[in-house]
Length: 121
Image 1 (cartoon, rainbow, N blue to C red):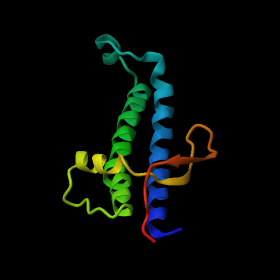
Image 2: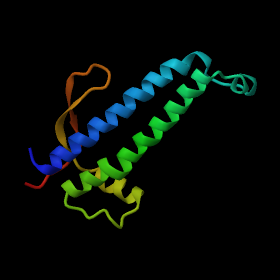
Image 3: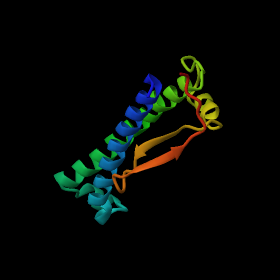
Image 4: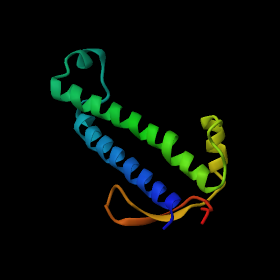
């Protein structure tokens, strides 16, 4: 496995951690969602903590995708993404396939994902 593959797998593992924590927080808040103003004003500290965890993990999840995962895919396909906008990176990534083994967040089993990606040797 080369350095690009290792970076991508690391990014995907980090991304999965945030997804697992978001799902855990969502499970805890699902009993009082959707919120109305009265319910929102009467949340206890634990409920506020679960909402905070969900929002924080969603933000981290987005950061991993935008700052690491997609940019490393760009490196793998030979594109310099330093000066690119995020939308340009997404457009460039959408046509490539990367086939590697990652952990499925629901089962903790390994699955193969396909993104069309050619990694340099």
